Amino acid sequence: MCGICGEFRFDQRAVDRTVLERMNARLAQRGPDDEGLFLRENVGFGHRRLAVIDLSHKSHQPMVDEELGLTLVFNGAIYNYRELRQQLQSKGYSFFSDGDTEVILKAYREWGEHCPEHLIGMFAFVIWDQKRQQLFAARDRFGIKPLYYSLDQQRFRFASNTQALLAAGDVNRAIDTEALHFQFTLHAVVPAPRTIIQGIRKVEPGCSLTLDAAGNLSQRRYWRLDATRPEQELSEDEWIEAIHEALRTAVKRRNDVADVPVGVLLSGGLDSSLLVALLAELGISDIRTFSIGFEDQPEEKGSEFEYSDQVVERYKPRHHKFLIPNEDVLKRLPEAVDAMAEPMFGQDAVAFYLLSEQVSKQVKVVQSGQGADEVFGGYFWYSRMQAEQGSAVERFRKHYFDRDHDEYLRMVSSACRVADITGEYVAQRLGEPQADSFLDQALRFDVTTLIVDDPVKRVDNMTMAWGLEARVPFLDHQLVEVAAKSPPQFRLKQDGKYPLKMIARGIVPDAVIDRPKGYFPMPALKYVRGDFLEFMRDILDSRACRERGLFNRKYIDMLLSAPEMHHTRIQGSKLWHLAVFEYWLQRNLDHSV
Image (cartoon, rainbow, N blue to C red; front, side, top):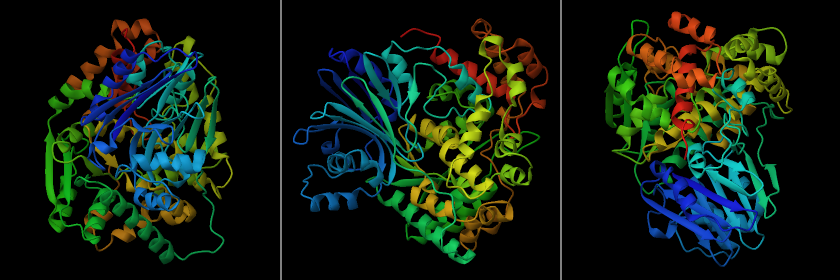
């Protein structure tokens, strides 16, 4: 819903307006409707607005409440803001606007650091508390909205993407070699607070930060996911009904809390098809849907229109279908890479980018099916992990890691070699309390960490590149809390997502429910050949790549000699991983501000 940035100086020097303007300019695509700056001595905020809730100037940001001594910049949507507004009004607060932004300000004044616990939605916000002379920042429970920062002895800067922080200058651009290990082991997931850039960190999901005038930073975790069974056992039918009710509420919230039309990204899979069916079930008549497809490859179809068309035939939404030729994919690939706040390996990033371009011409807000596979066990590797022997991390590693540690050491140059920190981190996270079984551990880790820096970040970056807000009802935290309490074997029945299949039966075409699990098709980046192969070869053979010296040339040559033979355990192209990573570095780090 927006882009935010700012600076808080500890040396009592005034914030440089030109620096703030430079940062804000790099957020323009996230908020094409309005912009604003706030400068007060050693504090400065910038904001770019995508107007979705309260379209009037009353919800302009940065939002200043002089009476409370608070200033806010906010990116996201608070779906229970009307209920919170009534609650706060009963406590004596008065409001000058009609949106969700001001509700956060009053909630902070009322509940302090506990205010995020009251919010249902997706959010990243920063508040300047003039009376306490401190900053307070918070990020939603699943990191749906991004919040990056840089910190040194002189200042704290924050922004919705890394490009804004790089544009500000004075950032240590060196590669974080430990983050590099995560990047190439966990499918481009670098868990917060790290990023691939040493001088840039990110706020952890479900956490808040408080920063005082001396530069002291403290973090508080305000939410954890409990993956243990309830005291009172539920039957299968009771679980399905509980999940159905929570999902219906999540979909309704994300449709109703907007002062503009809300569409659906309809892929042809179960998850997005179910969103359309539930909207119809809720009585929404003017449903707008959007599908995209690409050219087929011999090994894989490039579209799922045969399934999405069946949903369209049943519910008769206002449907838009786009077919993108491969030459357009390659031509537009640089733009998609420029929209990445961090390097991404998901082959569907460019697909979402091109789809978002078309969708943004029709609507400002869409619902999307991300999160269903992680919450409800839809991926093939969960059952394989469950059948495996050994420790939790060994079971997880064997069916998820893109590269084992030995291969990683062969891939990178000697200067980049580190210990198996990814294995150590995953073992620690899987071993955290409040999970009854290995599958509970794995599913919780996926939905609270892996999803954040893979599909969720990808969807945010690619949609917001066109001023399009994506809402993800399957990551409604109350829905996820219900699902996480249910037995994982129940969720994994019938090849996964059993509760959703039962909810969908009768309201979604059977062919969509019973089809094999599909993935957003982008076959040209999975089976690399022709112009795509030459594009990647040019990147990895470039002078910049050779001089950077991150990768062992023998490893690169091995991939280039047989690009279609080297796929990860979850079917990603290893050549694409190296090429897009190097390309992102070239387009973001190989220049001066």
